[in-house]
Length: 131
Image (cartoon, rainbow, N blue to C red; front, side, top):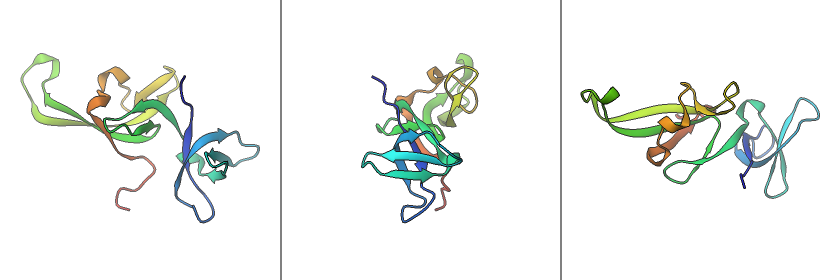
């Protein structure tokens, strides 16, 4: 059975700015909430809410909407031509593609093009890497 869960960054209180993971609670007003496993409810920043894709990276880390990945593509030789780059890396961001009704990369590539066994999460669109 597919696991459906979400994450978001807490807006208020002592946990402000921390990621919480759990069930999305449908907003009754303009606020967004996630209920974590401890039965705690957190108001979260709606811009940071992302759904678990059901996939994991090469380190078995859960992949969420908005995660940035790095894929080791090895020697890059487009269409079987000459090698243009050795030890090449591919960088992309996970996103939901509503028109196609599936998870995709922000460049529109299909999941089949990226090998998740060689991809690792390097951040996400909501965290500043310099922090």
